[in-house]
Length: 270
Image 1: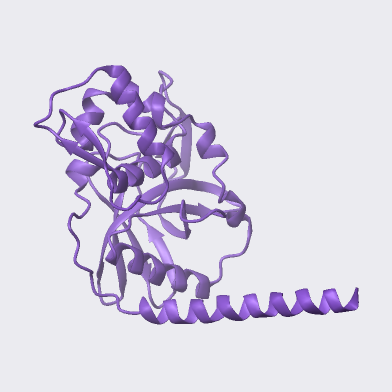
Image 2: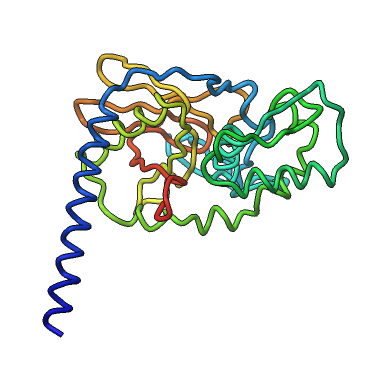
């Protein structure tokens, strides 16, 4: 028994060593943050959905300057889908190809195509799922809004996203600095990053957005954002180098300020 324990212990140590070396060398390989040659970059006007994830609550400052909320009336039909919309946008970008010159197909065929896209993880050897009759996701989503809302997934996917466990752990400034670097490296390689914005244990924000571009502002990094709640124009997420803090601007559902950020939909744990 002692011999078996020693044998398996040695195998475990060797596995850890191999993993560590692989991590070190892969880290060296990804240190260059210059943009790789990209055949097609994310175009907000073409690669985002034409409809929003709607808000259950209206947020506003009252006459005393306090941030308040009240339920929207009438009740919206499509809410709590920010994670679904953000993830689906990433899946369409990496797995779908729209071919407008091909003839339209029927609803059953489009449902099957959407199902194939949202069932995939990473791109499969560059093979794209062909969507005939439409030029891009924006056009397709405006024409087939109901179909997409039904096939991309229900609100439960937002509640039970596999990475939610991470928001309950502390976020150090070192972690957020490493996160900003990782996000830059991903985007530079044309891989969209879906991130979770949190202020846990506060519940002032619990939201998913897509990062698709970045620039160095001198004081930090400005990320271009596709916000599922705001399909009309891109948003911003900034990382401040001095405070090593991410900041999200004020809008009609968030008062604005510091947020903690981590990437999701990138591994079996997130």
